[in-house]
Length: 63
Image (cartoon, rainbow, N blue to C red; front, side):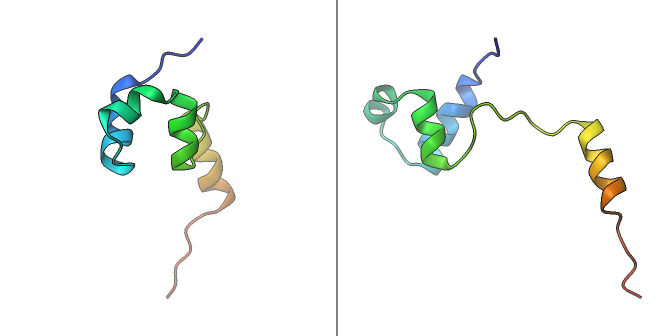
């Protein structure tokens, strides 16, 4: 079971969505993330995935 980043969720709700505290407490974390278009279960990209993408799509010189 993953821990919920409550501080991050609160920051999103108050700054991006501009929810009032009352509205925040009436919503579930999943509802708040749905409002932002983010996936609650999505984890940040790790180094391994970044390296896979860099290998698949290398930077190219435009010169």
